[in-house]
Amino acid sequence: MMAALIVMPLAAQQPPPAPAMTLTVAGFADGADVPVKFSQAAPGVATGEGLSPAISWANVPAGTRSFFLNMHDEDVARNKTTDDQAHWVVWNIPATATGLPEGVPKGSKLTNGAFQFSATGQMYRGPGAGAAGPKHHYMFELYALDTILDVQPAADAFESRANVMKAIQGHILGKAVYGGLFKRPQ
Image 1 (cartoon, rainbow, N blue to C red):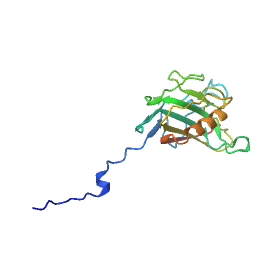
Image 2: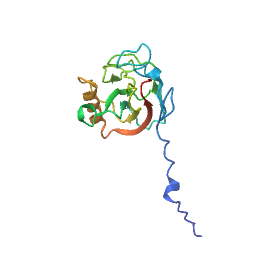
Image 3: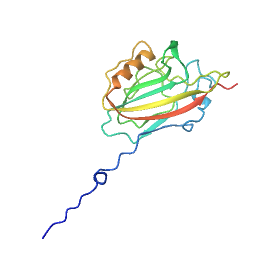
Image 4: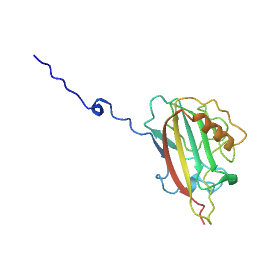
């Protein structure tokens, strides 16, 4: 008696790919206008500051040990370089985190052990594009990393961000992006 040999196509033998990591910023849809509430133009907000929005993420890649959040204004060319404006650089967010709450307080180190920095200092810097020009593109980029970074805050947000960007090379398991538009009201 001859046994039948059934050959399955390679694709049928592999599990389906994991869903992509997603990022959500509360208060506005991806690609929509950022509410004044989260900007430098909100009533009572000091220049260069603001109220951070609640941010959440899902579908984290297996093996994630920490996260890095980079919020920046893509329409600014800082000091005639390719650097854009650093609005919120947060690294070593624990792998157990599923988001950041609205209104993260000022300070170098968050209660969860993560570090934060912006062009203003150790805090969130809300969008602040001028009323006379076009809307600026504010991007929130979240990276899932297979390591906890050995990076301390540097002299400013730009040096800190450059150090973090260098340190994450070869450690990125996933990335999610969310964007918003903003210019100050007339």
